[in-house]
Image (cartoon, rainbow, N blue to C red):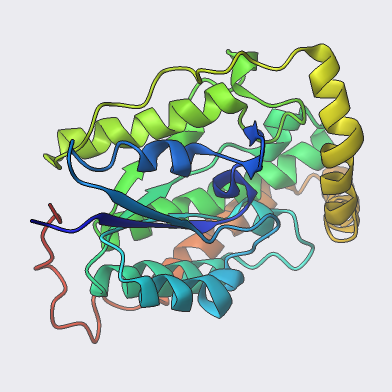
Amino acid sequence: MAGPVRFVALGDSLTEGVGDPVADGWRGWAAVLARSLAPAGAGVEFTNLARSGALSADLTAGQLPVALALRPAVAAVVIGGNDTLRAGFDVGRTARELDATLGGLSRGGALVLTACLPDPGTLLRLPQPFARPLARRMRAVNTVVHALSARHRTVHLHLAELPWMARRQLLSVDRLHPSAEGHHLIARGFHDLLAAAGRPLGPAPAAEPAEPPPGTLADLWWMATRGTRWVADRSTDLLPGLLALAAVEGFARLRGATGRQDEQMVRAAAAALASLGPAGAGDPSAGRRKLPS
């Protein structure tokens, strides 16, 4: 009899589960999906390595070695949003770290799940001086994620295209993370893709959590306690980065150079991908990995 399916999740606060609170912390889409990753009679061993505030560099520096030691059959890698919120953003570094992580997990025999991300400036309804540079960076990161997902033959969810703005209930009170319902939507999206690929699975996750959504008072209490602490933790690096972005963007608008900045970011993403070399370099099994059952 086959053993349990080992599922490991890597990433930042989105995968950690922020926005989907339970009694002992966060649940999140990866935990919801884990319950459905194996057919009846087969268990799942789930480990969530994702941590709030994580950058792509934190994958290879800490999360990847732990994940490889667990020898997962399925691994999720969703990262990049925090990279775009730093003054020292470098799409080339993001590409290198993500390529190394996806390659390492794939070579270890894992089926890898990836996703592109919605633009944080749009979710937060930031004014243009903040929103435009963030959108530019997010497009670059998503370009890299799309290309590397194809390169490493991952199961890729177009998370950025889910109806976040049309269905406000999919977002948590902070407007940046999914709500419990949003996390369930992500889990169902991955389940649908895996089922279409022919992987044996359990029943799809529910469309909505069994628990009723938090009311206004609960939302306010969360923001006043855990949410405020999350903002404080991020403000030491996020706020200065946003202010720097807005200053640069304002100067570019005065010079009429915002279009040129868009073009430069597109070229930077293309150069980042070109610098990685051929897919599967140094991996004799590249191109021959099968979908784990």
